[in-house]
Length: 507
Image (cartoon, rainbow, N blue to C red; front, top):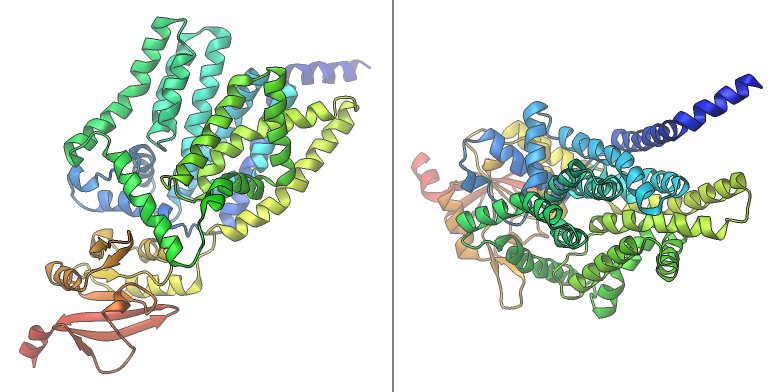
């Protein structure tokens, strides 16, 4: 009896922290297992790592490092991580894994403060630990996991500030939301929304705005100095995204109004599973009716509306990973609704039902995420990258086409281990239909300007419209250049390039 009382007393005192540690370990184990069994073959993550490598391996000033499209915080973290552990194929993935797992405890205390319920917080954080899309992108080096860490940590500190009225939490929230804003631009929307909630305390609101906007204003100044316009990071995005929509349409995909309208609800259903999604939307509705956690419910609906409107206007690209934030915001409402519906059951039965519900929803969603996202490197890509690594010299320059799918280009560059400066970007133009293409004259001007020595060519790519190359022993002579066939694998063919007059001199 005494032992039983001691155990009960121990669990009452330390049960919360033990439970949170166990769930964090589960989250780490799941993500670690996926990490060890997969690759990161995501084009965007490879592009970020290549940009970091460009900075680290070459003596460039900031102008060469500056890129208005991508927010600088995530890229800076990758550069710092690679500076410490220079393993380009592993370190950026470990960075995402670290931030993915670290989100768990912050999410728990955030939900606990918002819903004022340990049970909602525990099951919500368990749901996040198992959330398929978050698991997958915790092992991919894109910015979403880092952004969501800073976002949840900022909201957690903000919620604690309202409970304890301790300015340290408010200032921490301001710093964290500024980092979130420069990891993904959605974070910028939250700064004024959070400031409005502080309107009754002018000093607190002023201090929060001052700290939270220093980094965004610094980024605007950098855009003005190097790009000529303070909001260039937004206007460039609005220019690039429609091109991406046109690219998808060129592949025969019908992107009409209904497709765009339903895209994000469909993403949430696919990546959360139908039961969790339906319960979450019911939970949002029920919370609004009961006037409970209204601010968080409205925040979810606001961002869902922004995502849908942005997609309809073709200013937000069709990428499931953007929806991780929406999924995380919806999870506690799913738990809240499930607990409400089962409140008359015994606690143990209630717990069992919710765990079963999460598994029934997440298992098919996890299968979907694994199949749809780029977690495995195709064999041909590894072989092409290895050939480049083994045969290209430090003074060689290569121009690379896509092979009918853009996603292969950047990962092959990264897998090759070649200095990114050796890859010459093709001279794209935009035609009157808003499609990206290659102008033949500009292409050969670039070949001459950068003294290109290799071309990675595909019959399915843009170059094939004016450059017809076939594997053959004899070189092809086109527009003053000899193209010597060297290697073929999958959709790619590698040719060594030599200028005609240089070859004639050798003869």
